[in-house]
Image 1 (cartoon, rainbow, N blue to C red):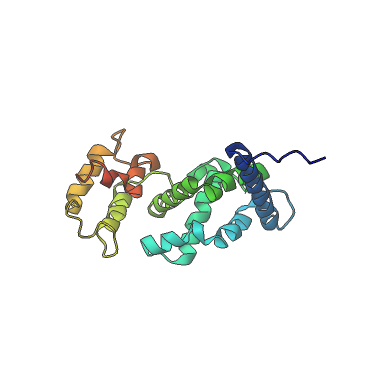
Image 2 (image 1 turned 45 degrees about the vertical axis):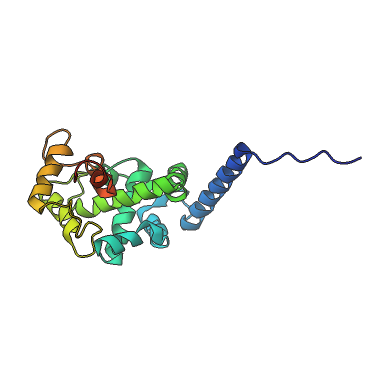
Length: 203
């Protein structure tokens, strides 16, 4: 007798297949960087992983003009913080991340395009958070705003872009939600992503 017809692939079955492949990929990635067989990922092992994945740091070189080694260092710090769930000083007390933490990080920030974009935004923030305290103070903000006026900036020549002092005033008025004079990633993210410029900040 004829075998029963095979069912058509549905969004659910295709999604499940993709999820399974992503899990297999993250497991393979974990095994490849767990070089000491400890079943954890150290900072050094994560640095090796980040260094071999240019998508995590190359855009920092292009957009900020920072050297490759520094960009890899920034991306590794951000990756470790996101994977272990701690930021700045808290992450320094953690020496390694677990397989599950790595797989979650891999799924969210490597495989997911939206997550990859968020990773880049966080890395940009970290590049200017020089003291690593998860906020931009006045001096760090000033250096970040300089990037809007550099020759290669996408905003260079934009008639909406005000003088830097005026931009700084707008940023403090509209983005400093708690009024403490410092900016968390969430407060400044819209400016990093450009959505603030597309919205009412520069209009």
